Amino acid sequence: MDIQLKRGLLDVCVLAAIKNEESYGYKMLKDMKPYLEMSESTLYTILKRLELSKLLTVRTAEHGGRLRKYYKITPAGLARIEDFKSEWREVMSIYRFVTKEDGACE
Amino acid sequence: MDIQLKRGLLDVCVLAAIKNEESYGYKMLKDMKPYLEMSESTLYTILKRLELSKLLTVRTAEHGGRLRKYYKITPAGLARIEDFKSEWREVMSIYRFVTKEDGACE
DNA sequence: TCTAATACTTCGTGATACGATGTATTACGC
DNA sequence: GCGTAATACATCGTATCACGAAGTATTAGA
Image 1: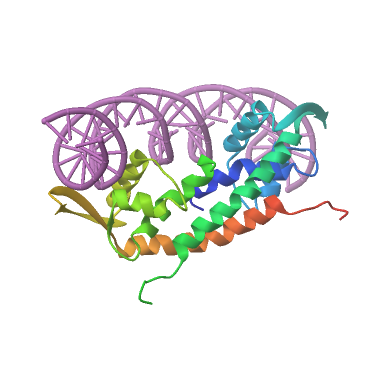
Image 2: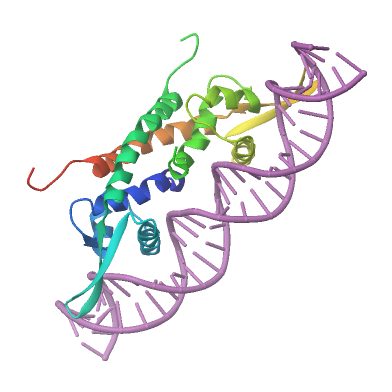
């Protein structure tokens, strides 16, 4: 899909991927894949950004002899999702503006 | 609204503003204002980009002793709007992913 | 032993929205 | 006649950001 359109969805989609339970990068990528594909470099950049914004926290744990980073959403992260929902009204209003069939004389 | 979310809507919103009749920058800005606000520099950058992509054409005409640039959508521009509509399905699917209330046990 | 999958990182690049600033004309109030 | 706002468009620099490419390392399977 169009990159620009994607941009507004990426961050919030990553947050949604850990909304219910903590997860790690590779798994998130696979969970999101049916909805939204992103490259690994993009995901890890986003995860770092979200951590800096305190929308999620990270812990490192060993799994099968290898280190894995688990990401957990914070209350601020959940609030970010709620903000997104609120903004969606505006988005839909723009969508209607773009797609409405007029024609003052139609 | 969130800049990232805006990004995917800007180009197509500008195209929508001239979907039915040609218009000029300043007027477009006012027409779009109830839906989506953007700065002048952003609009003129977008108009130039859309012209280069041949999604609209420009003609310069005098109006009240002053030059004005009138923008007119091309068939490719109308097609761009149709593409946007198609992509909206994907967008809505992501929206549902982000907002769904689960809870494996709900 | 070679390859694929898992898992995360870093770097450079190109796209782009925006504020700041500039130019120029018209319209209006005082 | 003078200042200000509105009209109308343009340019420049900056910060953000998604991505491809490439790298590091381990494990599993053929």
